[in-house]
Amino acid sequence: MLVLVKGAGELASGVAWRLFRCGFGVVMTEVERPLAVRRTVSFCEAIYDGQATVEGVTARRAASVEDAGMMMVRGCIPVLVDPTARCRAALKPEAVVDAIMAKRNLGTSLRDAEAVIGLGPGFTAGRDCHAAVETQRGHTLGRVFYQGSALADTGVPAERGGVGVARVVRAPVAGAFRGIRQIGSLVEVGDLLGYVDEVPVVTGAAGVLRGLIRDGAPVSAGLKVGDVDPIADRQRCYTLSDKALAVAGGVLEALLVLLQEG
Image (cartoon, rainbow, N blue to C red; front, side):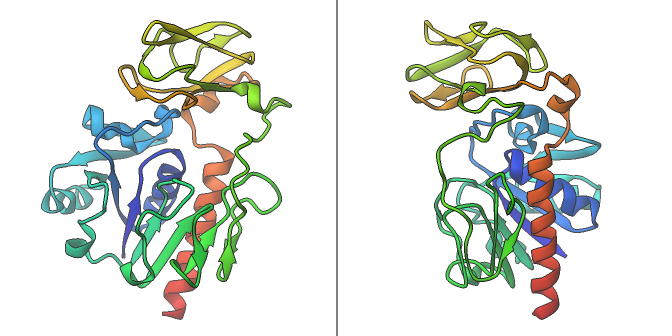
């Protein structure tokens, strides 16, 4: 059974990882220059490096639909540069998961597959998808809605270790990002992480640097470029988060329910 996952960032990668582990065939699509912060757990890094491995599962950049098919036979997840998921027409997947996390629907339709699942705000089950999965931390994280929508985006980062907004590092201006610290580094408040052009980028919280955007990435002012985890456990930088796994569990539930009903 083939599932097309649109997007290959952190949450999309958690979904793809869990589905792959459960025996589904998975193909992922991405933009040409993805801007993942949690790069160590995002399959979109295969776009740059040719392959990316997350907790024992490997994704590779595919040059074509035919190439993707051969990669699946070889036991890995293909990632295609295909922002509008045109490959869907050739692949004919049984299910489509929109995990782009754009906070709005960029073109996913009920007609795209037998089971269409949207992650987070921007999707309404019964209108543009068959099921929507909650991505906001809290009591309903990972819950599946077969009618209605997930919670609206608050724009406020959830707290980790009692720290909320301060743990998110944002670009002070627009320009090209240049990092000087590595993911997994221990940092203190005010530590220098890099520059956007010549403007310093500093931390607002102490902990471990859980994510940092790729060097040379073009960023807009206010864009999230880093993530500090106040719970200073380096191992968490290289494993899927509780949030990613909860959302992935919701997607797995939705797929089983929808495909059984179909």
